[in-house]
Image (tube, rainbow, N blue to C red; front, side):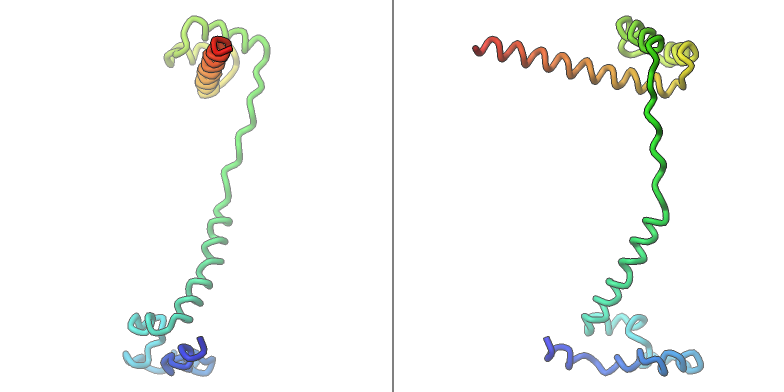
Length: 143
């Protein structure tokens, strides 16, 4: 409110252009410290706190924006031959060890990491299919 604004300390004149420009030549005594340096004055001036926070926000936004994002990896499209070999192995073992994944990667001309992710996604697909089959069986029994 206007009453609380008029009750602020008179140190706001310390932020005038003349005062700021001349402050470098003067020695700073504790009483002449600007509010941003003197923590005792922070709590007595809510506008100072508000302006300080508002001025900090754009810098935070810019700095996080400037950091940038990692580019997303392109989706791997598997050929029929690759899928056939991966599916055949999946039916043998849903959890192939590193040596099997590396062998598959060489045979399929893929990175081992792609083979590992393919198996992870294939297991998730299998779990989803089983869950749907279970739900379909439950619905049929209810009818």
